[in-house]
Length: 351
Image (cartoon, rainbow, N blue to C red):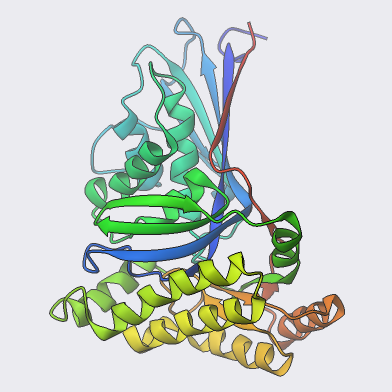
């Protein structure tokens, strides 16, 4: 194998996606302050950076966006960006040493545009991997902050802060944003029996098509920009985060289900478009099967995904999934596991 073909080292990283974000929308600039309860889960985003010798020939930087079947050379470190602006902007933000030759592969088992913070997970994993190429190490909070700035400052997108924090920290979290974008993250630590039962009851349903969360943010902002951070709709959303946290601490899944449903209903009051047609169809099936609660993930809107909290019966949960998937060829259950870990980064020297 030639020097060009064989890397001298490989950096790997993974970061989980996020579901069940009760209190979402209160982590935005127009909310000012807020509280969010969210849950980090697998599937995760994965990044692998192959480091080639500076003496090797070939492009300085290649991106392999595996989910899209695209592989291309990055030639610019500023706008206009190429096919995947989020990836390219994150690389530019990290200011990697110019004497390195890199081949960056990005993959996610979670669908893009599902409202589960997949883009945040990808950005967190990418920044974490690139951080291993430079002196010093960013903390999880710093990685999350960097990922959020890439989206908002470099790309001009609308997004809150909770997705990046969930991916960087992992686990079940209660996030208090005291002044946008500054926040504290408190892990919700419960006994294993409660954690395992919570995991058993959760179902993630992909609704068959992606949505543009930034565009939905713009719609909501157009309604709320004059209402102020203490508008009734935003205040309703904030209340569901501490309710969720306290319910899980108590092992009270009925109360947690009510908080999830309450958060979805508050989203609908925020803007009618935030609970889409497909989500309402799945919610009706969930109600018929006795589900305890449901939460439209992320910004909501048409498409995206829905988190369901099921009752005592595992057989009932499986029956619910079957009926949902039979009701539309677009609907499918995505297997999930609670993620104890957030961002993970490791490096192997190949010699």
